[in-house]
Length: 420
Ligand SMILES: Cc1ncc(COP(=O)(O)O)c(C=O)c1O
View 1 (spheres, rainbow, N blue to C red):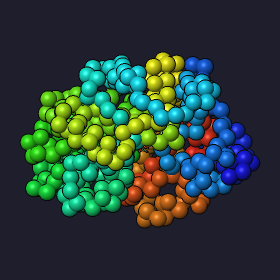
View 2 (view 1 turned 135 degrees about the horizontal axis):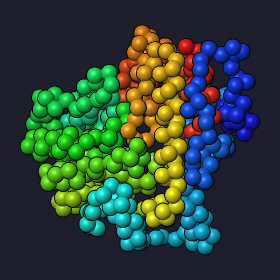
View 3 (view 1 turned 30 degrees about the horizontal axis):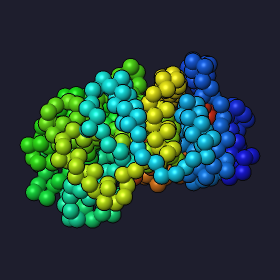
């Protein structure tokens, strides 16, 4: 995409000029006031043209790209500086994984999630989804059943099906405000062919930070019924509002016996393009050996130099960038909540407890899903994620990525408001 059209796409500062005169929607002061970003400039419009961005490539010229889960911010400069320094040596030969990689993860989990993990529980993961696929291969066979709890991140299902596993749904219960796991449904669903359950913790797209009680109950049921739990914790470092993320395997002995955690710095530090940058925590020795064996058999056990350098920098620099980012995201979330509270457009946002994805309940619009999508994409010029792609319970919803400068967000909201 050319630079000019990119800038037009994000349109931020001059957004008002895109709007028809006499705009009907109103933005609250909360959306407009300067934020406190502790010295980091999250308002900057970064130019992603010429970077092969998937987000902008697919959204197309002139639209607000608010779908795939990366953010329109620079990464923590501590990470890019570390990468730059390493590259300056011009040495890119075969590289072993230093202890510092695992120590950085261990220290981060202890500080960030208040969980002390023995070094040997931690292993490399070649990207969260690739690692989950290796776990599918290690712990199930074609034809076995894997449970997901939709609406949920679509790649859990996609790759399980590609690997010939049967995916079964245990849809979450939704009362219009909060989501809960359906434990009775889960008990009914598990049969002799069920091997695995994939948990999204925190939950994408619904933004839920699962509480200890829920996780412990899930662990109790799954252990009793002979199910392994794969916990995808890639959004964990973005717990908001002072809440802490609770790692699945930390909640009980049962969870530690049956759980595999996959996580990494890519969401929180905006490193999605450094694919293969992730780790696992697997307390149970046999399960760990089985997963690591599958990884080794596929020759996926070795992190790249950028992965090692970026992980250590992100988790040890203590630059203060992440707390400032979270502050900024909270401001964006407040902005969107207030916007839809003030403007009665038939859309109800579910306030996320973590991360930068907002789940919008559009059911009151009373439109079929393809018309909802067309309304946002073709009329408002906002390219977002289709709720239906997250499975049962996703119809009537869309997912909006608010990881962007406030000015872009307000401009996109105004466009949505004027369209509706
Ligand atoms: C819940 C969840 N898991 C995994 C991923 C992708 O992780 P990776 O790029 O490490 O495979 C995403 C990306 O959006 C995600 O939201």
